[in-house]
Length: 165
Length: 165
DNA sequence: CAGCATAAGTCAGCGTTGTTGACTTTCCAA
DNA sequence: TTGGAAAGTCAACAACGCTGACTTATGCTG
Image 1 (cartoon, rainbow over the protein chains, first blue to last red):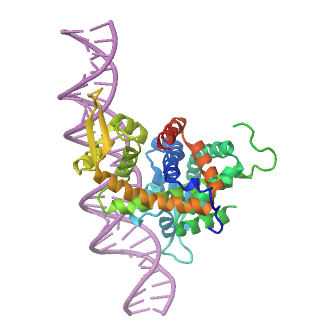
Image 2: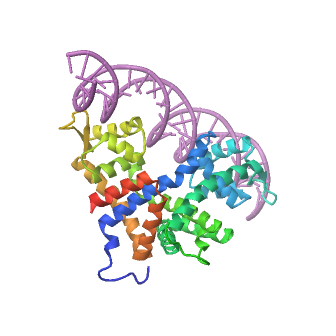
């Protein structure tokens, strides 16, 4: 916010620059998802399964309600994914202790194994991109992405930053 | 590649940093698509229509084959989208002059109007994010996104940069 | 000219993942 | 004890990917 560069250096706000940013997001997101997608395709799972596994791994014991708000999907949509993951023994659902209506979600050993496999693939690409671009570019990358989030999602993103590190 | 910073400044390649990068991409992409999605929902169109409209606008006269490679979808999937856009009078399909097997795609006035509407919404968010982060961050953002693309997509992305500016 | 290749379009069917709406069960808290 | 929150379920639907099989029109090559 505050003091953006004044005067001549606003070329990065050109219509053409903005369109290129949009296209960069589109093509980069394709690359971003392609490696896990290839693994998932061999397992009869999809991206929704990956996302559930990712966030359960990041926040073990999270409730179904937490998860569906985080993922931005309906209870019914998440439930379909969770059911198959539980049936297949990748996720464990434990009844809450303080509030027994809640279900707390955990990855099983098998679930952790798949998480590692998916994450390794995705992190390898991210690592290569970070290494190629250098630390200053990475800082800029994160700043722009953060500014692009809805405020509520930015809040949740920060919650993970604190919990994870 | 080349000379990455040596020694202590490799914190940006930490496992935790990479995971945060992954989550940033996820949350940011949600924001990135949310504004056009809201408009499209009122029109019985989806993201696939938006993507087709976007790239036809960027490369008027492109062929169906060009477009499906660019979008990374099958002919059948693209055709379903194009058919509705042509029926609704947003896209015009002209038989090729040199090669009559080809169909060249153009936005009609109505198509351009919708493109503008969708693009305005998406660019507004991108502009706000760029402004908030500043030009150096934007440069880094683009560097990292580019490094994250598959090489073939990076080539196509550059083709647009040259054609567009 | 014959025959193969290419571009496009179409039909049928399927899977994943999102949606709404309606409903039940469980259980906490006022 | 009663209202409401959390979770789960069933049904139906839409968007948008996919494969496979096929047709039509056209271009190119031997």
